[in-house]
Amino acid sequence: MKRILLSVLSIFTVIGLSYAQSIEDVINAVSNSNLQLSVSELSGEQATMIDGSMQTITSRVQSNNDLAADYIKERLEAFSNLTVEFQNFNSTGKNIIATQIGQTNQDNIYMVCAHYDSVTTFCADDNATGVSAVIEIARILSAQCIDNTIIYALWDEEEIGLLGANFYAQQAADATNGNTRDNILGVINMDMIGYDGDVPGTAGDNEFDIDVRNIGNSIAIKDDLINILNTYTFDLNAIVVDPGTTASDHSRFWNQGYSAVLVGESWETNDQTPDYHTSGDRAEDIDFQYMTELTKLVTAYMVSKAGLVNLDHTITQSSTALTSNEISGTYQWFNCDTNMPVAGETNQTFVPLTSGNYAVEVSNGTCSEVSTCVTFSVLSTEDFLPSEIKIYPNPVISILKIENFTEAELNITINDILGKEIERHKSLKRHIEIEFNNFPSGVYFVTLKSQNKSSTYKIVNE
Image 1: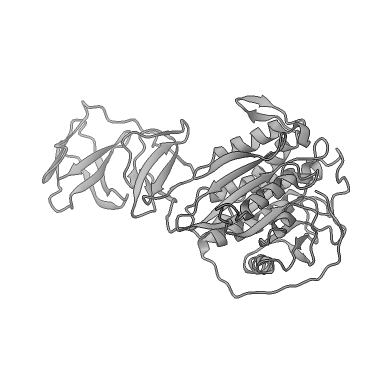
Image 2 (image 1 turned 45 degrees about the horizontal axis):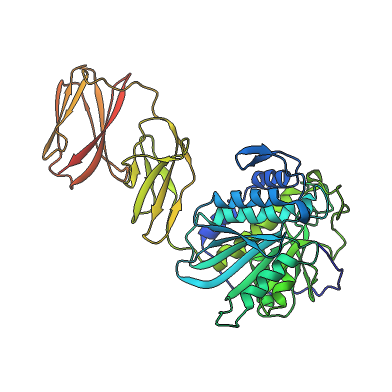
């Protein structure tokens, strides 16, 4: 990052906007530990898996940063709903561009970006912090179906003249020879977001800069950020810098008339890293809680502008089943331990037969969302043997019959496909009959438990 210290005009404007609770859930998904790991790996202070082997990123200097570019591209390609590509703009420079297409307004584009090149070794704050934040935001938002398009961009050759961002902005704005100017509605540039002069992790001023100029709707972006800051709970204090610096990638979008701001640590109050542009810029000097707060703020802005499609990918867990909370759509359950779909499990409710970690992919026909993995433990009791329990017929038309050859007392629970308990019985009889003729047609789960054994049977009621 090249930075020019400018005078400040503090503007705190609050707009009466309101956001759904789901936005706060998305904000809270930002992971401090993920940010720490990414910064350590990008700065070369920790080895990481790249191209199938453990490697160390020893350089992000523009003439020798292909390994860093591969790392970023691989991380983004691991997320759903993204199209990731290199954008080569000269013989050595390449941007990494990840696009998440909006479901309603594909041409309405919001962008979050950072540069990944550096001037020397390590350079944790400048700008492994910004890159790590963009990757974390992509991780979270790529799991959501959105109305508008988001582009996650990582620029090369910022340190030698903002070349990568300049190329992209010029291409986006080109309306000659039949080209259409890209409808980029807002750009958030994250450059050096990890240093706060207080002891890392302690409460303090937590000031950060929003660099803005009256170009396009840039002032409105600043206003929205401050409104979000005042709507949700953040340990941050904004310093508005207007006119803001032109010495980072956002300015190349200003040059093309696009709306953009820079978010970063407070150069305006001289609270920037003392190891700027040196190999002393190390991860140990990053205030990761401060960095997490800034990442949450930008996440909140991006999700508010992207617009969440009403698709619920959360899971409700009971002692016997996992149920998707999306009441309409299609479903596919996955074994997170093998990263493979569970064959045949395409209903809203899934009864795992073995303990493990499971997730569900839900789709509305045009977009899919995947839940987080949840740990499910099958009861430690043994299953009944076929010689001990016989349950028939399946499918059942009116009466389900259970032959209890053990003659032990059975607790019988019947759940519908949503996991809701329908009936409960207790019996010592050897021959048990349960009426199904009053149940709607569909799939049911019958769980039989004795003192030492338990089995669940999937029954189809015709």
